[in-house]
Image (cartoon, rainbow, N blue to C red):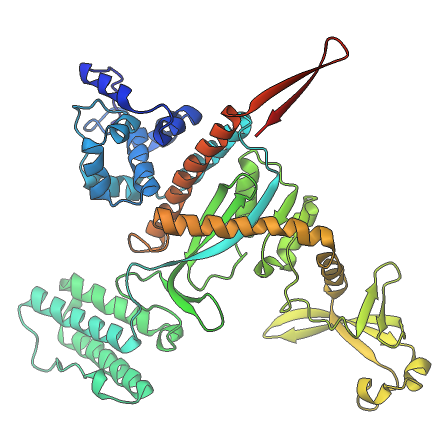
Length: 514
């Protein structure tokens, strides 16, 4: 049950006058109104029954401090006890008690597990738009990786832990392990061949499960049954044995991902949408390490628009050069600044060029296509559309490089391409323009924001375990980083110098210098 917030200042509150007016926490408090948080989270509390609960706004403020200064739950509560600025920001009098650090964990899991943090982040951005603090109309999107709060393990080690857990639960729930059950877990480290070691451990666990289910009534041993079901679930996943699925029993949601062709990581991918000019994050989502960049683009784009941002330009790296993303941006009249991906656009422009007005391809010798037809091919149960462009026969017949170009018994060259290749050709030509190159430089600011979140706000490593925990961490980190950035934007506005130049009597020219 939520009680009315105590706003009565005590005599000791005069100590807060020692906090400088330009302190970052004072600037945050003056720039953004966080009163709406309690109303936003009120639905999670019983209106009439239960013990008086701590104010959600106060707990959110504590969590902002935690991620602003990269502290643990215990450390942020401890610092709030003796740091005047922290306690003032939280909204308590100097002599008032702070909640236990364990309450922060309960609050995150029970009150912030849904879309509440998205709404809070969206409201902060909306306030900035309404107050004129941010006016950026460009959106940048990118993924950054976060390491899991554990290490990845080989399948043999995981299967050993599964077997140990089953045997341990049997002993706890039944008092002893039946003699017919083989308790000698193979030592996989003594097996040199990795494949043989995996198969040996898998065979042992499967035989152990069959033996336990035959010897023991698992209906009266719920923990043993739960361990067996978990083992069956893991072993049934073909990705597990190939080391592409679950790699830890501590954090079952983390996955192995690739930063480059030769460098991998174990953890999560955090995808951020931000305003590159103002440095404000507008939307955040988290996926496991195997996530393909841009899959959740639509959700991040829509959340950015809900914040009150009018998106006129969109920036991304090659990973976002995908048909669905390009079509969505085009349908919303957004200028696209995304480099062409060679994996999507497979055309040798040194040999072929395209004229979109006549819908013709020209080869390096000047020959042009005179007809085309479309075909459909099936791959792995899916249909893919292709276009065939046919060059003029006589020119191909007399071409000096015919032997290098025309293969087999064909008379003339036929060019097979995907249905999107002509459109991608236009993007490729635009990418080479000076205007594209100059504007695209602003995307580099997203890399700086990723580095800031990791270096100063602890997003280089997960604080907890599981996707939901990482999601809350990423969104709270984005909220804290936004508030810090907003103070700089507000300071720039407040330090502007107003120049008034009198022109022709009573006409005034007004300009702001930043």
